[in-house]
Length: 115
Length: 114
Image (cartoon, rainbow over all chains, first blue to last red):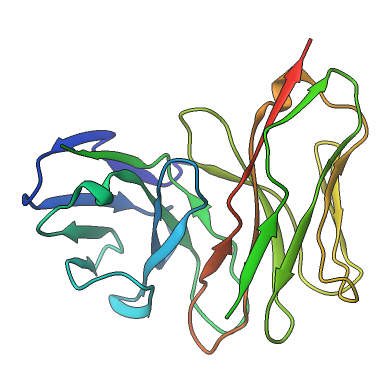
């Protein structure tokens, strides 16, 4: 079975530009979460979506937005890029989203470099 | 809020040495605890987990025990191999009404020499 896939693998942008990152969850998984991993740090939670609804948002500015499609794939958008947005962006999928933990499976990530 | 503190690295060991990576947490309620591993150029892989106090998670020779009294979840392995070289992240998931938000530590680099 295919795992979580993300595209593109690498991306180079300049300050002020906008970027869209894509994620396809494991088949049958209905929840997608996004994390930002700055070099040398642990991943930081950005968003979680379940059944196309936002279920959680981390401490990130409004320049960050996301959505989930009927096929459960997801896009993360970042506007007005800053140098500090350079990071590995990880997508994770899980079966559901609820009070008790559902194991999250991570994709390989998209490496974003902002120049 | 919830937080995770890991021992700083890098940790450098010779092959077959004993490994301990310390992890302590702060959380309200009773979180689930995890260790993830990240190999160079790859995403995160779940190594092991424990969902309640005194549970022991184990996988591939790695073990960690959920200690509520000391709020710790230290990772151990009796004999490391070169192939264990990676970054190890301790994480927790607080039980909230909605959501599967993971809170990660900063990560510990492990280097194993042959």
